[in-house]
Length: 319
Image (cartoon, rainbow, N blue to C red; front, side, top):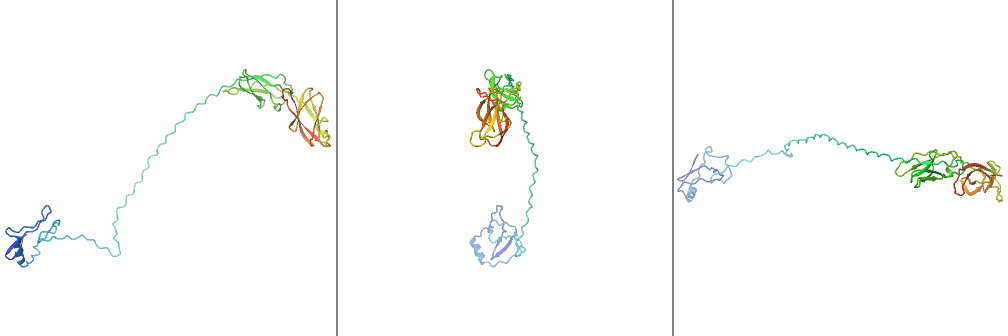
């Protein structure tokens, strides 16, 4: 629609404003032959135009406002979006957000099957070493000797040889020589009447042998000892003339020519006595009244070998 504006005798036709397609606003041009000065003069002299009817006034409410409005035309303003004012003293309640999604519970996987430990290969047990040959123990020349001779035998060269009694007690040890021969002396303290002896040998790298055949039994006679009266009760006397009755007389008996040693309460006196075939009187000085253990045995003076020990208890009586 075109609105007519009366200004003096000139009638202007005002074209409605429209925005070009590229968003740049342009103004409508005046008719040809009209210059700007005349337009200004005519405008100043023109009476104030009557307002057009509101129903015929074109208004483009949705016109874009990206460019400047043309002269004489005002662009309508868009009403701002408004929110209702909060009540005094209260804070706006924020809109609840979405509830958090709970994390899914992981499903446990299957437990790994343990790898079985390999069964160890049993170490084969090595076979036991071979057994040493059994030695041979020679028969003694005199089983009735008061002082036995050394026991001799044959076995494996270099083997360790042990002499054992009937209870398995070790009596003596020795080593076989290069020819396999061996001999050993049994101490007098380990001799006992009726004993038998066997030999066992062990060669290097081999097991112990079986015991040899036993030799014996040994008689092992011993001399005897008593008090001065021939009994086991003996009065104390003053044999050293020191004025005290504290000396004990003993009688030693045995075969003629035997050499004997005497112990008093477990201690050997260190003296050797040769028997004459008759009781031999000897004295022990400074003895207290009471019981005393007296030991006696035969000794080989040449070699120092000892016979079996015989013990008696003699009671020393005060006078």
